[in-house]
Amino acid sequence: MVRMFDSVLGFFSNDIGIDLGTANTLVYVKDKGIILREPSVVAIRNSDRKVIAVGDEAKRVLGRTPASITAIRPMKDGVIADFDISEAMLRYFINKVKNTVKFVPVRVVIAVPSGITEVERRAVRESATHAGASSVYIVEEPKAAAIGVGLPVAEPAASMICDIGGGTTEVAILSYGDVVYSKSIRVGGDELDLAIINHLKRNYNLVIGERSAEEIKIRVGSAAPLDQELSLQVKGRDAAAGLPRTVTVTSQEIREAMRDNLQMIVEVVRNVLERCPAELSGDLVDRGFFLAGGGALIRNIDVLLSEATGVPVTVSDDPLSAVANGTGFYLEHLDWLEKHSRVS
Image: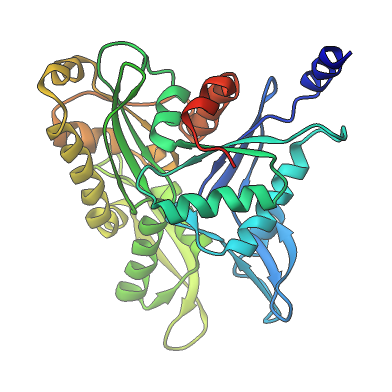
């Protein structure tokens, strides 16, 4: 009877994988795949910090709220910056995807940057537990990303991944199913957006918000020269006059604005390659490495990294889903993960 009850509960599995990103949160449900993909944004009422909206709805009001409401991103550099708001956001996402069957535990696999501290790791675990998870398993983002893009990480040969997220860039070399060497820097899409904001203010005296900067990056941003350079009209507020104004920016100047941060990404990739054991370096000469994360979609970033390192660089087919898909692999192997991960 007990075995039959366990079997029924297994049918109504609440096993969830979460890519808790600085910019976006993706949720993978066992046997269903990725069923939620929303911005990591929460709108709160300032008077009592009551949550008004989460995810897509909250991002729509980002930079457009009255003084009584603030839209914030509780994740910074890939880790929790505001515990209470992160907990509320996690609870919202978990409740949105979990089964409504009672007595079924919610087991959650969460991917985190490899460079976070033990205190930050504990904050992620506690936040998920308070949000309703019965068990929490922590996995490193670069390993999840490598698995998610389909790299043969279990082979006795080098596989390399560079995951450029909103708050961090994770680079790792894997072999025999584990990380040989990895490095994480807190530079990602957010820093590129900030560089664009600063460029517009410094060169045009134009004030724009995060959403506008991200749109500029997507529409005309590039990491290396384009065959046909692009231009875009940008609307913002004149910093001196305080009135709306429109300027035209080009892909060349946006590339120059992002140059320093892109160079930091180049340097961390080069550093990981230099630390690769000699026996594995030869594998990367022909195989190269894969790009994942939102930053992989910046035009010609593969060209920039390939020219800087001398090895092939491939943008994965679905870079935004790589980490979430990797958590899906771990959901299929929770028994193994329980033996190799701290569980709350």
